[in-house]
Length: 385
Image (cartoon, rainbow, N blue to C red; front, side):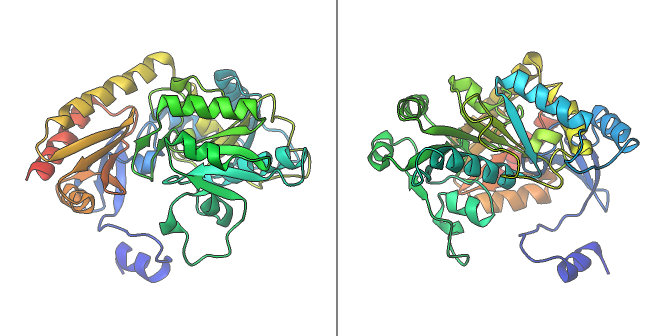
């Protein structure tokens, strides 16, 4: 049986796979099992921060593999402790809980917010999120997600979430009451269409949370770890979150989630209130250390420069209606159907993604300009063709 036949026979059919089996790669250049070349503008949905087979990452992970691959959280490990220290020092947050995914990091954020609220008032457990948001695929994170398309088949959902329109501060204010414990946002709504929230709106949210002792949760699962041209996207807007969740690109291709807490929230979750078997796994943490330590100011400025380069090029393509996003998280609205562009790009050796009606670009942060130009040449031909 071929790989495709094996997959179709034995893997649960929850993914809309395209007809491609990726075999190997280097940086933003990948190869299929029949040795066809592809330029990668997706990086595993913002996971492969430094692309495929990054040597620094491989050396770091391999070194840890030769020591120990896992131990329970009854014990300390150096990679876990050092990564937590690194994240806190670079963000100003005070403590970190490690898990395995973005959904889990958001579950932890939600649990912390509800405990913070109910420690003060047993009914203070409501969280406001935004329409078009996406926070994960567990029952509770689906409940937090503000998209009706995800709210079928799996009822009953977790109660205690209110969804309001993004960038509509009056609607948000109208939902406030003494039972609201947190407001949860993405700076850029990735799955919702690569929509960037307005700075004035974000400033108002922070003012509301500060004045009403409501926690500000920022979901940086997709936007974080350099993706938007700063270590975390909220940093470009001058926000001071109480809780930050992240995952995807943090460990450069290994499963990890992290939930960061500020001074107000760092001691809310105590022994026995939360846990994770694989949380803080030394291999994943070692991989994350090799990523985070290289996301310095110079590198992040290069991410912004590449973003402007791509946006300027794409804006000149005939058939492009609008461009959105931040850093190397780019949404392109075109006259053609996004799904058709994805397939045509695939046929011509370019991997792109979609988000709602837009083509979505999430290339490795270290993508070279030669790889960018090669990919954009294909994209231009498909959009204009």
